[in-house]
Amino acid sequence: MKETYIKRICVLIVAFALCTVILVLGIALANYDEGPVYEYDEDTYEVYDQSMYSILDSDSTVNISSDGLMDSLNIHWYCGNIYVCCVTDSDDIIVTLSGSSGGHAFYRSSGKALDIRYTNSNAFIPQNCSKDLVVQIPEKLANKMSEISVTVETGEIKLSDIYANKVSLDGYTGDIMLNSCSVKKLDINTWQSDLDFFGTNIGTLKCTANCGDFHYEGIVDMLDFVTGSGSAYLCLGNSPKKINISASQCDADIYFTSEISGFTAVFPETNCELITEFDNEKLTLTNGKAVYGDGKGIYINYEVMDSRLFIGKSADISTDDIPVMSRASDIPTNKTEDLSSDNEPNLSEKINSDTDELNSKDEENSSVDGLNSKDEKSSSIDEKKTVSNELNSKLDRS
Image (cartoon, rainbow, N blue to C red):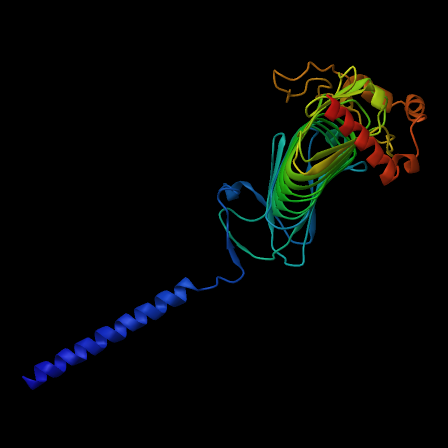
């Protein structure tokens, strides 16, 4: 009887010890830090047949023969800067991989497409493993790309001297820049990025961001910018069909470098300050709507509360290097996706004539000759407040 009692006590002790061990292991696993290992995101990076790809070693360059056929570039990246540009002294596509963390990349050139990937299929990615990628496209191809797609989790994206039908840029953090590019349709999705465009010619531009500043200098036909917070600066060398800015908080400055016959601007009736450099005698205000001149040619939809919308006549901008869409033989110059609704005014299509003017130096000088200087553009705060008060008084009378 005594031995049975002792055995029961021993079993209870062992069971309690096992429960304690299991509990400790559970707590440890729940709080386990995986360290520098990051699992491949299958939602962003698809599994692919690695046997079809070649290896690009770290800190190395490879020349890929294009045979004049490639017109599509796809880059799937995780961490590091991406730079895609035009090269004039080579007939090959030059791909360079660099980064202090080492590691390889994988690429495949098949037919008209070049596909570049950050790592091997369905792999684990060490954190802080930054790899910078430079893709140089020969001029004969850079002038007539069909599609460019870049996906990167963390890193900057820069495109320079590229002409394409369609460009898609997706990122989480990291600035995005386009310089001297001409794109028929550009889609950008990012979480936290500053967006800079210099000397660009875009047909339809759609940009969605959580936060970041938007800076655009060039020509655009249709612009749709949606963000949580940030600022927008537009200096346009043409009369776009539509400008849509939708945000929780975003002050916007819009300048036109060429003469315009009129515009229609729609903005919140309350908690929105409208300032303009245009002649008040030609400006009509009625319930959150401003019509200047004939009201045609440009439609501005500003859906931002507690912010300021400024519309100016002139700004400093160099139009010498703004590319022409027609330089790429495959790119239509006038067919752009219509972002306007049925209730919005029928707006004239002017981007072709404006583009021709901007690419003739003599015509450019004559169109810019009458623009105000930078000092005139930056008028005093008191003067702008006076104009704003006049506009508000007109609104009250209406």
